[in-house]
Length: 246
Ligand code: BTN
Image 1 (cartoon, rainbow, N blue to C red):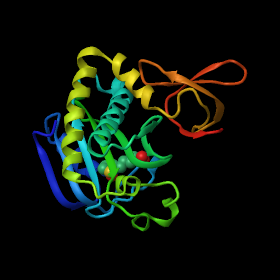
Image 2: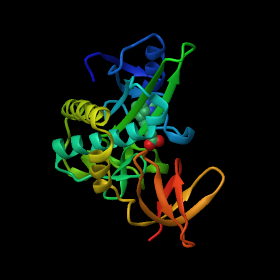
Image 3: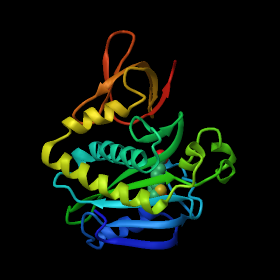
């Protein structure tokens, strides 16, 4: 991963560039990096604040053998890689909020957006977008997210090298995606759960057509969140917004 890096000073979204490159046949492992995005996008059609020169805004093209079934696990594996990179470069202790938010002291410092691409020939690719807030001050964020967003600098008190962070992140992405492909999710699932703020806690899961409350018991081998409601039923959650309720 990262043998082929496409760097652009500014763009609408690295996801859009990565989709285009993937359509043109870019190999798995291709990385798109930028200084700033004018239309950075988040999950659920939200926008993503991408202050110029203050974060890592990147998209990675992966071409695993069986793309669609494994998309959720690749998102979780990416989250573990981000946590390890932050730990290595800063000594902060990030946590993961299912499925893919990285938190420091309860505030979000990183978002991961996994998108699927398939072209007319049925060739598929995963486009994994990673937005990592590094050197922002509070006022660099949109007022409406200032209470919930943070950066590595805000939490550690130090300016953090974006270059070191990217190097470390690409290293761990390589190691963990390889480990996942060769050995499956077992060990990575244990790592993910050990970093998670969600597992073992009472949560509320807002989905498009319903909201459920209960205890998050774990994730399955497929990356599906297991939620036990008060009536004792176990629900598999594939996609939702999670809130802690205690
Ligand atoms: C989220 O938490 O909602 C996911 C945010 C993902 C943001 C990154 S920044 C690089 C890449 N390009 C985008 O437009 N989005 C992702």
